[in-house]
Length: 212
Image 1: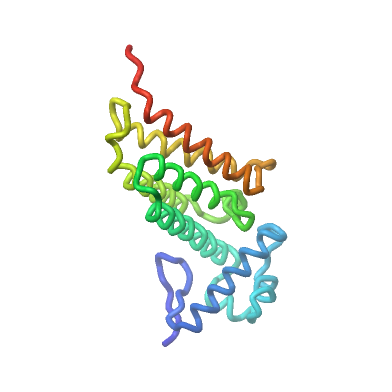
Image 2: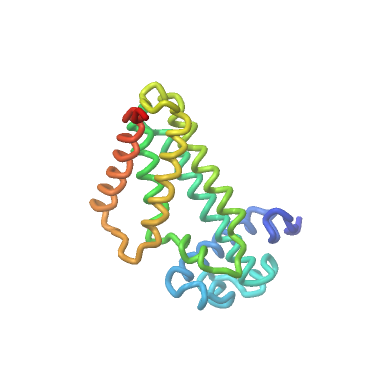
């Protein structure tokens, strides 16, 4: 069976296990190489050399560099969604447990030393907006779904709206941290920052609305 185009993926999806393994190796090599030298310097030839495959095997799946990087974007964003879902699935079943697990996983996802998200956002020739929007929607939903059973612990007048505000604030803070040139990378500092963000979210949720 030969590989076939997938209109949604915008590149030819593997139909055999060996082809899938080759694709994973190519995307892994592209991620490593882009982090090492940047997207501007990344070439199909360089990716092929890093992955240990022929240039032709890459062009049989991708029309060029833009398609390859679009596939890389999808891979990275899907991994973020999976990591967050796994973290929330094993979180302590309390409002603090959910917020701390979510914030820690989200911050690590954005600040990973292998993360190329900020670079991909600045690659204007790649249309990542739709895929990025889907990921933002999904990670937002994950927190809302995990925290909703604990809305009895929320003291705001509208618990649902309060959770929505906290989800958006945490996402924004973690993304901002990922694009800072001086972002902390050591484990103690990152853990402390994640705890601070989670505690700020908890403080807001547990503070009654002001009387007007």
